[in-house]
Structure formats: C-alpha cells, structure tokens
Image 1 (cartoon, rainbow, N blue to C red):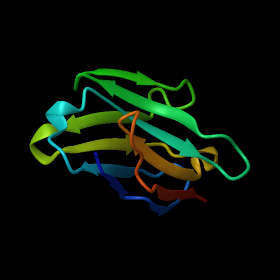
Image 2 (tube, rainbow, N blue to C red; image 1 turned 120 degrees about the vertical axis):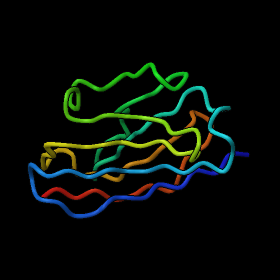
Image 3 (cartoon, rainbow, N blue to C red; image 1 turned 90 degrees about the vertical axis):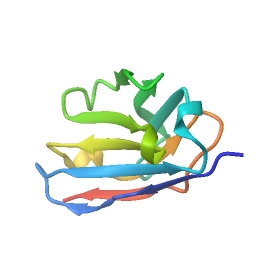
Image 4 (cartoon, rainbow, N blue to C red; image 1 turned 90 degrees about the horizontal axis):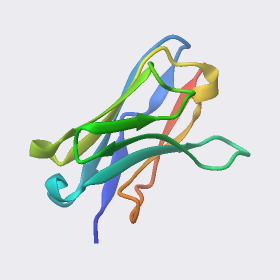
Length: 110
C-alpha cells in the first residue's frame, strides 16, 4: 500500500508561484505514472498534470505553459511547480499514483 502526502499549498496572490510536493512511502522508481489533480468547490476533480516513467509529461490545457510536473526518485517525491497563478487555480490539489490518493493540500489564489 502506497501512502502519499502533499505539501506546499497556501495563499498566494494572482501572478505568484507555489511549488507543491508529494512524498511517497515507497521507492518512487516503482511509481511509473504519477498525477496531480485538483478539485474546486462545487466542481468535479480534474486532472492537472501527469508524469509517466519519470520523463514523459502531460498537462491540462488550462495549465499548459504555467505548471511543471517533475519527479525526484532520490527523494521519492513528485513536484508541481505552479507559476502565473490565477484565481481559477484555487482548489484542493491531490497527488495520486492512479491507485492511491493523498489527503490533498489547499491552494488559494487571491
């Protein structure tokens, strides 16, 4: 059973940046596909970015060019660097290995 814990959320002004982290309790070399998702109040959870086999990345159109997903196997951690944040990015952000989910971290853009 993989445990995932997100961190790095917070309150930021529009145009600012945050770097989210997702720490895994297993060697992330074994995590071939990781994803970041988000859920805003009253909306369904949506995919934001995925990383496959540590170097193939996919982004939702709404974050393309602003967000970057990366994976550091030495630290068993997946990151989501978020730049040029907008109010529409406000949501709870979750990471997942597509079987397990972290508890989420709140991102609020004012």
